[in-house]
Length: 203
Image (cartoon, rainbow, N blue to C red):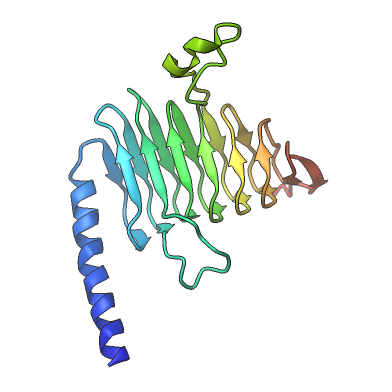
């Protein structure tokens, strides 16, 4: 009986996945180049004047079962202001993470993004000092985020507006990245600082 239930669940998800991919692919502002690996259904919220590009063999994992730590929520890709862009490079794996673009978030190829990360290029509101009563009426500014190829971002990390993380770098779990991180380093902490540097091998 258990095997029949598991088989039924797999068939149901297969059909659900096919319908989901067909639905989002039909939108003019969402482009999927090649294959996309969905593990459970993500939240994809791309407003009409924004865009999403997913390159070949990207994995969006929203399934807590089988994942090595507790995943709190499904993958969420959100672009909700005019001209906002999210780009995800080929072979990148994103697990239970929110990526919210007001302006532009670019993630390179072969990146690993662990569960419960928050990558957001805007603050949502202005500071509004000294007119703090008006803060609730503001929308804040945005600064582009760029995550270069082969970056590994540990679980529960916040990547804040205007940050560039260089090629090959690793961000340790529970970090807050508010400044640029160069290539080929390990960085971590709140705020994230460089912990160790590695040489770049030139061919």
